[in-house]
Image (cartoon, rainbow, N blue to C red; front, side):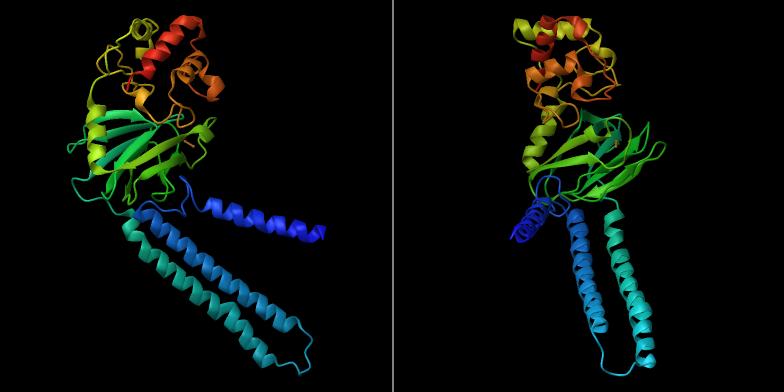
Length: 332
Ligand code: CUA
């Protein structure tokens, strides 16, 4: 009975785990875009094919493993070996190769001229995201977050100036490497409104596992409104505390690394903070952007994200850090 119970538990785990792996915000098997649908179709086709072949091999093994009454037939055995050892694999692998090559061109083709172009740069260990205009000049810059209009192609321009990263939004499409000294391209066609998760798919150093981002696929009108909002400069602080926070940001030298458009902070090393309070996450999709988390982040970023290049600013004193966090939270 115990063995049967154990087997049932294992089967339940496989079924539940398998089903859970097929859905969610970061599943290649729950497509939200044309490219991911193609990848999922290839996966299911190959899985079905593998099951059929596995069943055939088990059946053959069973047939030839059972006790035989009839006399051995070297001629039949030779044909069996030639058929299942040469003809069958060559046919199946050729068909798979042809199917895979036939799928390839749409996956690597560029988006039509005039499509939305988003540049993503792999940093250590976060994602610099720039929306570009028709001439290739940046309209806005943000970090670890991409918003896209549903039903429209988007052209990603991918690069890195440090090590190789790999840009991957499983629900929307396949991965693409970001290689220092080269620009790579990825075209995606989101087909479903929703929030998806992306990740770095190439080991790139200490905080590789923390290098995530969020993707929000929106209605085109909502997307246009969001982009227009992102193009605005930072809001002016309205309360004594947030005004103190802005002064702390200036005094502590945050502007050496960070930009807050509309202020004197124009650093390019770290993420642009102009609208950091409206972001879906902080610290490459690991944390929320509320004041309490921002306070912890400024005090000791290394505790929240091991390997982060930003130094701790504990020496500023807790009142100043609290004011700074309140200011950043309201940068929406
Ligand atoms: Cu970037 Cu792994």
